[in-house]
Length: 74
Image 1 (spheres, one colour):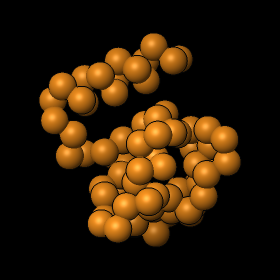
Image 2 (tube, rainbow, N blue to C red):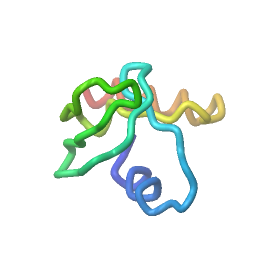
Image 3 (cartoon, rainbow, N blue to C red):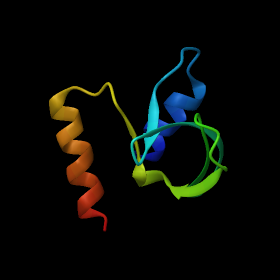
Image 4 (cartoon, helix red, strand yellow):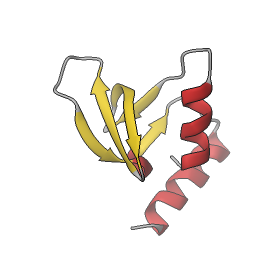
């Protein structure tokens, strides 16, 4: 996920499903490219890279582009 999309999600009035390693999360804080996430299953909060977060409800083209961007940044 990029910073622009993360900002949109944080500013949204509606819930948006965001995931990290297939687990649903909520965003607790953002510092640079590091995001502190809480896990819906009660797992301890964790600091993760913004690029490792994703949305499930992306259409196929957007999902492909997001994955391509993620792997090209590594």
